[in-house]
Length: 380
Ligand SMILES: Cc1cc2nc3c(=O)[nH]c(=O)nc-3n(C[C@H](O)[C@H](O)[C@H](O)COP(=O)(O)OP(=O)(O)OC[C@H]3O[C@@H](n4cnc5c(N)ncnc54)[C@H](O)[C@@H]3O)c2cc1C
Image (tube, rainbow, N blue to C red; front, side):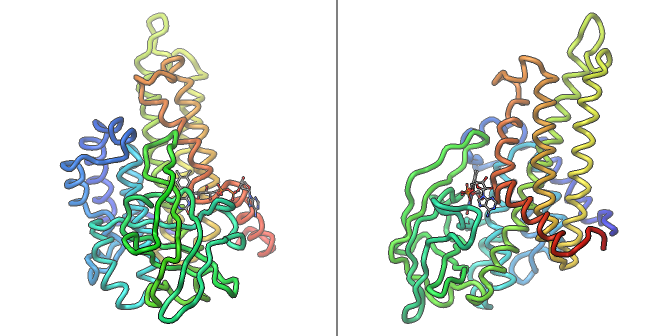
């Protein structure tokens, strides 16, 4: 499959990389510890219009590719996970609205989400499961003109600051349905906030107490709910991998710089010790593999292909790659790797998050293995 970049995609990479280096990286510590972009930075970030890339002009988009957006997300991820995280949370709501929503829903919600004037998110996980749709307890009961939703959602990013979410609930017929939920409506309450090791993030419980969702807030049909879930999560998963691949590149750059400047009896450790070279080579190999596969998956998504399997493989690859890169980069720094004064320690905390966000590793293995066994072979 051909996945060389277009002129437009190359330009997106260049402009986002410049922004990440010049504007985000100097504020990385502040961003990661507060989860909030200062106003000036946010303005410049919004002007880049990254989330506009894969959406149609009709809704304020740029009619470009999913690949372009993912490359931009990766470049931002080099400097901090905070700005690209915001893009992805809006994307996982805007994408299903575009592909499954009614014309009225698209008109009403897409322009604000795509321009990032409103804040979106996705609510699947519950206290008892973040993996198994059949285990969902949040219930959607049909009533006149809409649905009454009751239940608890857990670990929901931006649940305390969002305007809207795509929320998955079970109907009385045991189907998984997708709803657009508005945080300003009665019956939407937020609870305990989580605190994570890898970045500051508004995340926590939502309590739905007789929340009324009008019929027109059902995203797709009830029968399509499961498909909406799988497709939105798969694309979101690719996005989170893109952030982590960008971060892995930064970790390698820091390791190279340290290995070239830390001296051991008049020689840089990178030159003197073959084991340092081996670590650099291992990190670079992992990054090349993750990055190439990211492009391959994005190219397939842009051609309208089903990327359910590929998203799971990318996630497995990224989790393992990020763990190796973060550990090697830290070890090259010796004790400084553990020092808060050095940036390199942040990747170790990020590596811990990769296996969890957007589905556990075991579930990715189940998807990957079962799909191949059902197909009966690996090759096409
Ligand atoms: C930073 C962060 C942000 C998050 N943001 C969101 C968000 O915005 N929206 C959202 O909905 N969720 C969010 N989550 C939750 C995340 O998606 C879930 O934590 C994740 O999917 C795993 O679910 P769980 O923790 O409930 O684990 P469980 O589903 O309880 O699983 C526990 C263990 O059992 C294994 N297991 C469970 N079922 C199976 C099975 N059928 N086959 C094999 N193994 C199985 C799992 O692999 C895992 O090891 C976020 C989590 C984090 C850390």
